[in-house]
Amino acid sequence: MEHIVIIGNGISGVTAARHIRKLSDKKITMISAETDYFFSRTALMYIYMGHMKYEHTKPYEDWFWSKNRIDLKKGYVHRVHTKTKEVELTGGDRITFDKLIIAVGSKSNKFGWPGQDLDGVQGLYSFQDLEALEENAPNNKSCKRAVIVGGGLIGIELAEMLSTRKIPVTFLAREESFWNNVLPKGESEMLNRHIKSHHIDLRLGVNLGEILANENGKARAVTIKETGEQIACDLVGLTAGVSPNVDFLKESEIEIDKGVKVNRFLETNVKDIYAIGDCAQQENPNPNRRPVEAVWYTGRMMGEVVAQTICGNRREYNPGHWFNSAKFFDIEYQTYGWVFPDKKDYESHFHWKHDDDTKCITIAYHKETGAFLGINTFGIRLKHEVMDRWLTEKKKIDYVIENLKQANFDPEFYRTFEKEILLAYNQQHITA
Image 1 (spheres, helix red, strand yellow):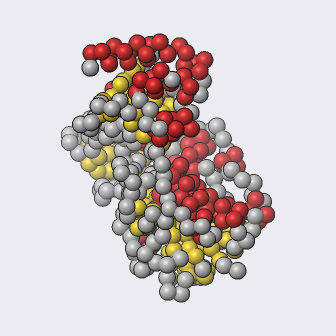
Image 2 (cartoon, helix red, strand yellow):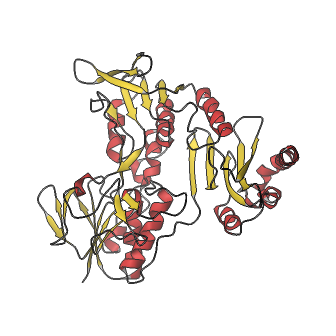
Image 3 (spheres, helix red, strand yellow):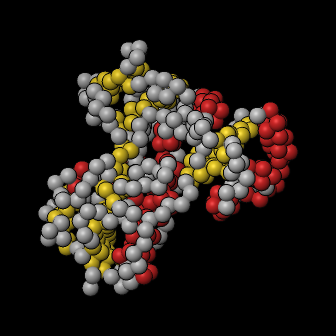
C-alpha cells in the first residue's frame, strides 16, 4: 500500500490528509512536534483571552483520526533522505515514504537584533508561543509593560490579547502609518486612531535598537534605534512577520530559497515530494501574488489540490482572486481583489468612511474602463461568493456601488449607509 507522509499538522497538511482519505485507501502518516492534534491557529489568541479552551480550538474530535485511518506521530523531523525516501526524527526514528508532503508552516522573523534570544522575548505563531506568553505575561503584576515590535496582523492580535489582561503595551512600527505598506492612506490613518483609542502606545516610524537584559538574562527594556530612548518592559513580542520554517531541509536535495520551491502542481525538484502552505514558494506565481503566501485560505486550497495530484488527478494550483480577512480590535477587515496602497497608473479609488471612524470602504477600479479591481471593507462584512463573481465577471464600478447591498452579510445593517455611500460616490465621480 502506498504510504503518504505529511510533515506538519496545520491547515494545509490536515486538508491534504482528509482529501487523500476521501479519494483513496492510501496509508497516511502525519508528523508534528507542535501538538498531538490539529487545532485552529487563528484561535490561539482567544485561548489567552479566556474566550475558549484549547479543546474548543480542535475542529475534529480526537477519535476522528484513527477512525479515518490517519496515523499521527508526535516528533520533530530534522532531516529528509531523498534517495532512500525516509524522514528522520530527532530521536533517531526513521519513517519510509512513497510520497512526502512538506507542510511545516512558518516561524517568527528575527533580524539579528541584540538580545533577540533573551528570556521574555518571543513571537506569536505556535502553540508553544502561547504557552510562553502565559509564562511571560500572566497578568499585569508580573508583566508591567510589553513592547511589540512589528506593525502587522500578528502584532495587532498580540496587542489585543495583552490588553484583555490590562497589560500596558507599547507598539513599535517602522511604517509612518500603521500597515500603510498594505492599506491606502485613509484606511491606515483610521487604524492609527482606532489602535490609540484602545490605550495602546503606538509609536510609528521607529525601529527596535536592542533588547536589554537584567542580571538573570531576562528582557528588561528595549531601545529605540533612532533616538536611543529606553522603554522598560517585561515582555518583547517579535511580530515583524514570519518566514517559511525550512532550515531542516538545507542539507537535503530539495531546492529551497525563502521557502520550498514548487511548480504550479506544488511539486518540488525531487520526484514524489511536494510542499504546501506557508512553507511553499511558488516559482511562477500568478500576477500580483507573492511567491510565499502565509494565509489560512491559500493553505487549505493547496491541501485540496495536492491531494488530487497524489491520488492520480494531477491538478495545477490556481488560487483565484486574492482574498483575506483580519480583525483590528473591534474592526473587522476584508479584502477581495487588489486595492494597492498607492494607486497604479491605470486605476482610481473610491473611498468612503463613516462618521464614527470605525467603518470604511475603498474600491479600486480601472479609470478608463470602470472595471472593478478590488475592495477593502472595514466594519462591513461582504459575501465571498458575490465578490468573487463580480471580480470574475469584471463588473463595472457603477454596478458594484449600486448593488453592494446584495453582497452584504447583513442588508438591514447596510441599509443605514446605502444612501450615504451612493451620494459620496456620485460626488467623487462628478469631481474626479
